[in-house]
Image (tube, rainbow, N blue to C red; front, side, top):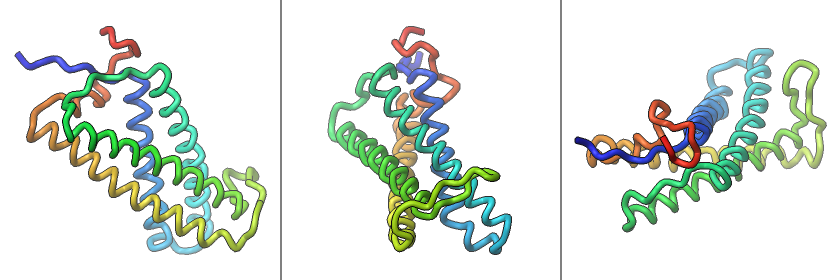
Length: 184
């Protein structure tokens, strides 16, 4: 009989996968929009959606960090050796990059004074000359995040398909428990 592994609580799993989805969608828009959508109303609308989703992304990362450090389930370490140190460093890099991207994105939105939805727009604050460097650093941080996230995903798949341990199953939506204390 396979060993039963502890799983993350429902809120942690939901916030994790929502964050992953937002990261991918925002990165795809930021990376490819200028190349595939001609200038005009559609491109402006998609950029507005990018900024709105970016603010949602910021709320989700804050919620995820707050939940994980207050009520979220802390699971036992699967491998206390060097792989655990690497996993902790990878997660720290992911969180740092997520916060950096959110901060740079918010700063960029205000420096630009972007339109969000309909008549709802942010005021243009700060020096407009900061648009280009903020956009550059935001995009660079997003690209680095994607590289670290791909490493994170590859590690999860290695755990699942090569090592056949329960690491990936701990964060899969179908396995999540609604009890943050770990009682099933």
